[in-house]
Amino acid sequence: MAELATIARPYAEAMFKAAAGENAAALAEQLEAVGRVAGNPQLRQYADSPKTKAGEVFELIAGVANISLSPKVANLLTAVIDNGRLVALPEIAAQFRALVNASSGVSDARIASAFPLSDAQLAETVAVLEQRFGRKLNAAVEIDESLIGGIRVVVGDEVLDTSVKARLEQMKFALTH
Image (cartoon, rainbow, N blue to C red; front, side, top):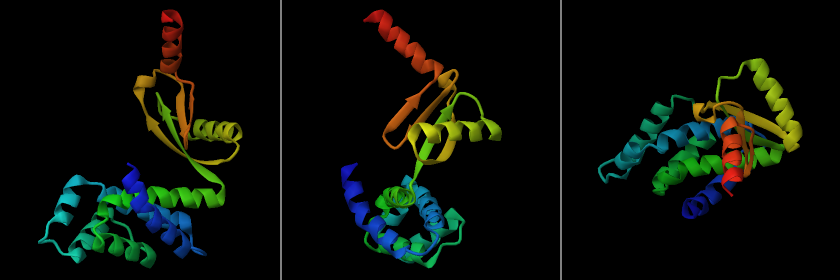
């Protein structure tokens, strides 16, 4: 949603500038945690109620996220709530993570696998992917049984699909066209 991205950008950039000299990765994790909570439609409905006070929303989000918030993240959360921009918090967290990754030369990689990967398999896979994409990767693995076998990797806007499902789709297309 372009509008959310536009709303989120100044918050993410301000947070990135304020995070100079701190562990930005830890701040990104805190922001992502509160962003996941803020993404809940029921919580947003509660927060949008005129009877609900901003402090109550803050306490609820911080309590559900169940993490200790740094003063900078707490200030950002307060500003977002006060300005009625809670809906943009997940996008703010995503943009902040992208800024942190860009500054450190690291990219997030989503690896979908048909089967669970052992630690050794994951380490080997990440090493190969880092060579393939030419940068350090933060890998997150999810199980997708529909792949049948193999993996599907998404790094930014790049996709590497070596799954059996993708190969079957390619064969189907070649046979029908």
